Structure formats: structure tokens, C-alpha cells
Image (cartoon, rainbow, N blue to C red; front, side):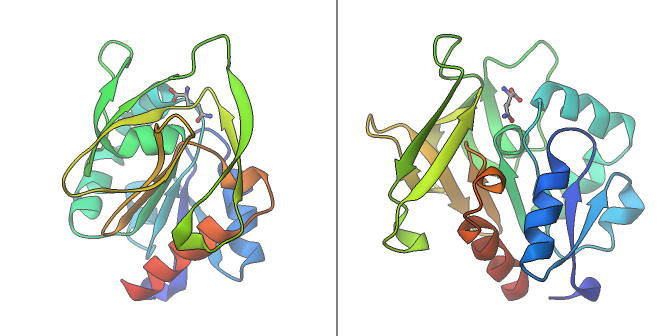
Length: 197
Ligand code: GLN
């Protein structure tokens, strides 16, 4: 891990504190990132859940959107959960007017894909790259991945086949919130990516 071993969590909005706590529990030197100069100091970045349209606006306001796009394209390991996954996707369906993303992840994701009937739910997922034990996944006004582009790979799907975890080189994304369940395997998987980069 270069850059002093710091792992950043984008701290503009959303549940960044929970991600920092999980990363620190795993021994990582996790730091909040809001400004471009803070981005320069991290070897990897988590983009938390929250509200993607707000995070988008704040990222542009703080001047971090453009440097972050460049960092993603030059190989910075980035893990997006829920709204964070939306921020990473090349294409967003059901976005609000004017909503932009950082992009880089060869995906189309649909915001709020489970509608108002089923805002939040929990389920167990088989995720072979994390081992035999299923992952308990918490979905909160979650997106789904509607199209997995050629450069991306699906890591997990719901019983109906909808994709909810994805990977592409330096990028990792989940529709759900591993920072809320005490299962640290996704964060460990991400930290291995950071160390390998
Ligand atoms: N619905 C939110 C969005 O569109 C995501 C919800 C979440 O991150 N838990 O950004």
C-alpha cells in the first residue's frame, strides 16, 4: 500500500463514519476525504451510501469530482456502496434531472430499483469470491445493476437474477451496506485490492 497506507472514505454526505469504523477495526488507517488535496494522500477510497444526487452536487461544489474521476481512471482502488455504487456507474437510470456520476464502472444502474413498496429489506447472498458462508445483505432504497458491461463482472445476484455486487479491475461495488452488518469480508476484500495496487 503506497501513500502512507491511508485509506479514504468520501465524507461529503451519507454513512461515511460507519465505513471508517469498519476499516479501522480491520487495522487500516482510514481517513475522511472531502477536498482534492486529501484525495492525494490515500491509496484507496470508499464511497458510502447516502443520496447520490446530493453527493454528486457536493462533490462538484467541493471541487473533488474532477480529480476523483481522474484518480479512478488512473487506477485508484474505489469501493462504492449503494449511493457510492451509483456514483461510480457510467450510466444511471431514474436519476434526477442534471444528476452526474464520476463514472468509470462499465455499468448501468437503476436508482431506487425496489420502489416504495419495498424500500428496505434484508436477504442472504451467495458470493463465491468471499467464501462459502452467505453474506447477509441490507438493502436501503437500493439500486440494482441493470447492465453489466463487458469490462465489469457480477459478483452476486438476487434470486430473481438482478445483479447487486460487481467488480472491475480497481473498482468494487455493492447495492447493499456491508458496513451495517458486522460482516467485514467486503472491506477485507477491498483492502486486499488496495494493497495489491
Ligand atoms: N436511493 C439512494 C440514491 O439514489 C441510495 C440509497 C442508499 O445509499 N442507501 O442515491
